[in-house]
Image 1 (cartoon, rainbow, N blue to C red):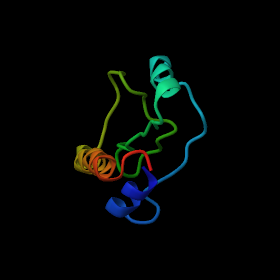
Image 2 (image 1 turned 120 degrees about the horizontal axis):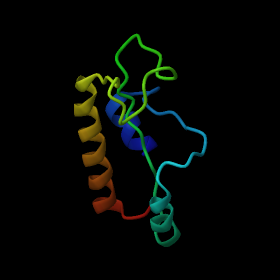
Image 3 (image 1 turned 60 degrees about the vertical axis):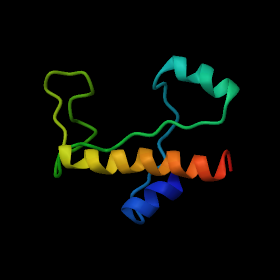
Length: 87
């Protein structure tokens, strides 16, 4: 993830987040296969992501221009896996 994010967005495009419970069912997948969970920072420019309304909230806003980076990230990770496997 880090290599793909850096290749797409340059240095500073990747941040390590503290452990969190994102989706408890994903932990079952990780018991069988290596994996990672990634978040795409889509808060509007100039806003504070720490105080923005959370996902699935009617007041949530996103910067939709970020979606292209998210799509590129998913494609890059898939392409890297198809080329290198679980390296």
